[in-house]
Image (tube, rainbow, N blue to C red; front, top):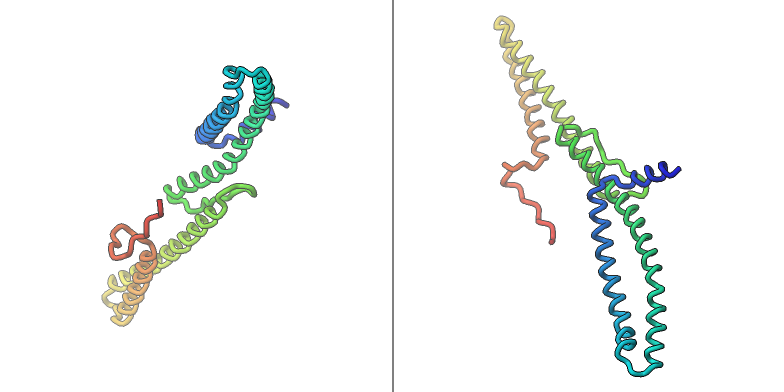
Length: 211
């Protein structure tokens, strides 16, 4: 049972280094804030306990000081709860990031079939939707380019076959096939022009994101 729970908890550390770094930084920040707050809160009572010459003030300060010290275990419990909360939070954040990373790696290899699929309570749902829409648009454009390229190839092969048979050349037939090939080529160029490339200097650069 213990091993099962341990394994289940480890499953929440999808991107261990990143998650642990976020959790440690968060705990450090909360620890510093808590320590500073406790020090500021207790210092007046410590000052009265040490420097006051009135016994009643010393006793009242001591009682309040001891009462505040009893809150420290509660702060520790809250810190543990915060730790587990951060584990679950980073799990819901890192899960999508890992999914995005795998999709990016597949895209680098030319695989556009890998989309981002998130779980019900994951973050970055809007970003994944936009990314998947981009993949769909790329796929449609590339499929169209591939189809038009095959048509151009078929037309050019037909022209070559006609020119290889001088005794059966028909000028109108060759011109018609060449014209069709030109139209298909123009369609391919139009499809490709959908994408912004570095050499397209005449196209406006996107505005930089605000800092």
